[in-house]
Image (tube, rainbow, N blue to C red; front, side, top):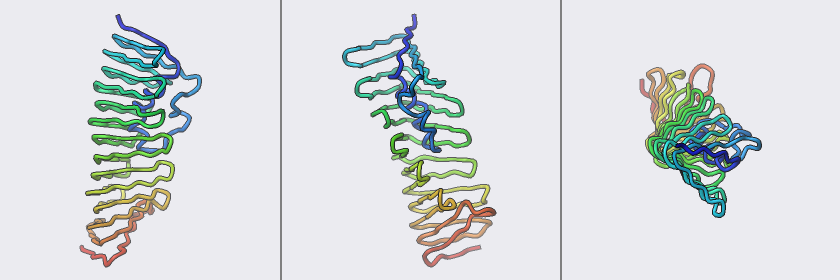
Length: 248
């Protein structure tokens, strides 16, 4: 017989972690929706076995775990969470969905009410945006995301890959280090370098440094530092900052 328990509050953080760890790394989240304990929302846990220690605040659930919170659903094989420390994890093929957001990964760790990590074959999606990588970290308080082992970010405008990536949602700033590579089919643009920095509020300014290169309309530009404005209307505007070489 499956155990079902309704517990207002505690599962909010855990479910939010499953739903948002990857997805919010793609675009600035709705602050009201991502609050760890949204007032008035209801949390429900179903599993084959549930244990909850009211004194210590430690809860575990095993077997066919299903958590529902504020219209979102997260499933896995095992959950451990402490309501006092706000730390826990969900493991065993985690899958989470809410409206236009989806996440699947091997494990989700909750380090606090605002800090969480998705680990193992992470695939997150929000509308037309995707994030993929071995590890995705997210701090909702700082609106900061990090892919310490690299990965892929993709939107309708193109894809961005590197060995290490981090981004600040509020300021729309992102940085990638190691084999940075950008492809934008709508702009017929491709470029890369050792380091790439993106400034979304500055006409989509992309700064490539270290063996930087860019290709557009069969024209190639190489330089120690390239600045590209991806949000220019017709095509990406590229500026070589150091003795750039142009090839056709």
